[in-house]
Image (cartoon, rainbow, N blue to C red; front, side):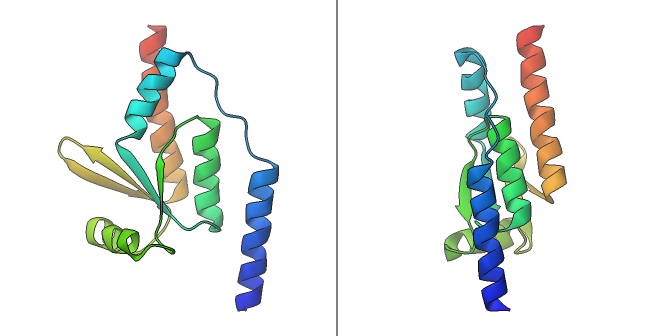
Amino acid sequence: MKFIRWFLGKLILFYDRTFAPRPALRSNEEQNKVDALAREMMLYQFQACPFCVKVRRAMRRMSIPVELRDAKKDSRYAKELVAGGGKLQVPCLRVREATGDRWIYESTDIIQYLESRIQTLTSFFEG
């Protein structure tokens, strides 16, 4: 079983590198705003987790440079995740907000949150 997980992990990472999505193109001003937004976020993840790969691919497609924290390789990040989010489950997006940290689990919910934030920023530039 350990070999199968190792092999599937390598296969997932190979696919991710080979077929990486193209990043979104924005003006410097727009990308600076997205970068500022991303500085308030951290993605707790495992490198070969398929759901984490799904979120990382979406972040690349949207050109959101969120800090990645591998909770499998670094026990500090695993402890932060459990202490703040309440459970050791990845992917989990930590968002620093004025009212405190927000912990978003589930890949689909994370992607929807990121898309809504990007939509808010881009509508600001269009309007």
